[in-house]
Length: 129
Image (cartoon, rainbow, N blue to C red; front, side):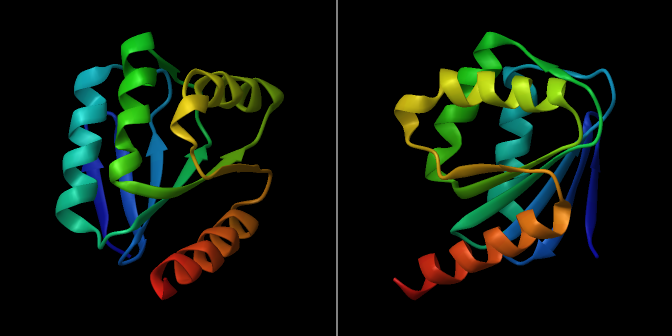
């Protein structure tokens, strides 16, 4: 599996149009990190891109980063978030609430494989359109 190691975490290729993102412990995601993230996705993945956000570490976002993530809707078709704790789920829900006007196609999961399966089904349906 191809992996892009970045200063704030890593992005792995699950399929040509499905990326898995794992942010490092304690990172504060700001707008510059979101811009790097966007460039990697646009440069190395086939559109429409689906994203598996694996919240195995604790990290936080600036408000500007939360808003900038909403602007990724032109790049990201589907988002699946794997959470391992209530605090990770609550943090994800806050980001979802900030971006509710963006009509994200997003779902929270407790198991990584279930998230991948959901992305594959939705990605295949999107590609068939």
